[in-house]
Image 1 (cartoon, rainbow, N blue to C red):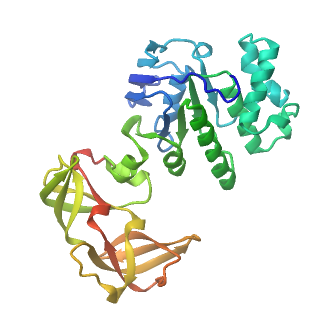
Image 2 (cartoon, one colour; image 1 turned 60 degrees about the vertical axis):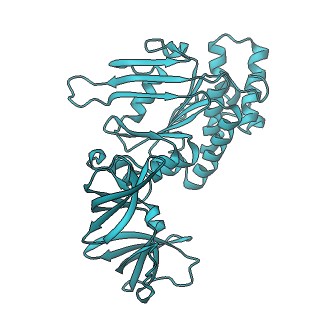
Image 3 (tube, rainbow, N blue to C red; image 1 turned 120 degrees about the vertical axis):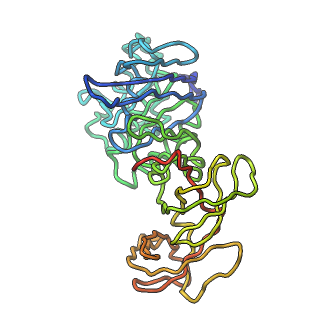
Length: 379
């Protein structure tokens, strides 16, 4: 790797990838197919046990698929040994060698590839400089902080000039502030090198911030594969809506549709809780019962007497049952017609509700979304 030169990035094609263990009826990964373009940063996001790490380990060659195919740059690598796949991987535990120095850890993969010493030393220094630890090459890894060890593991993965960079929850062992710092560093390095990167995480904030596209996994299946905007604003299932970000999901009856723009239509709905209203949804949505997604931060909370009669907004009355302070936001639980809604109010607002206050809850129709009934998953 020459100074600040990007390694050759790879296109990844996964077709009908499946992994089962023994006689288990439910596969760990079920017929997963997706394509990752060169230079893309893709996050696999989902709860524990959803199959995201299993998927990454099959792509890395650490697990043999039960069936399916893995291609990189149109070459079938499904059964290629792990050491011949030209991939760099950072594990959750970092997997550093405690008896080696920082430089020896970073250069281990190069030594195994029989790279000559002068070239090896040059690439080690370049990789360490990239993670801003060029001055620590002679130090033992036991003397490093958690964040420094994470950077060393990243440098070791990058120094071999991988076609794909694979990251398996590398930030999970760090404290909250250091996690924020390191996710910024990883994003900076990935964008600078333009290296195809797959990142496994259960942290939705990490996925939304870092990734170009996100594969939302649940029970071994990709529920949705799209941009951060798509999975947050336009979820294709109830699971995606509830897992990515905070969500109010309310049952409504879709009665009719109006105009269609860019594959989305405006629909009229009715519900005992919300009354009659309008919202956007996919153009193929059919009349009937479905779920309306309302994000808590999109709700405007005002005193009960502040009822908004504008035709451009919808309003209901509620009662504050719980209130939590998080610094920049107040988190509220509201009782509305026997149901519970969650709302977020910026602490910069001039009026901040207290527990027991009667309030008016207002939202704009275009900031809600209807989830098709045929796509609603059990959560």
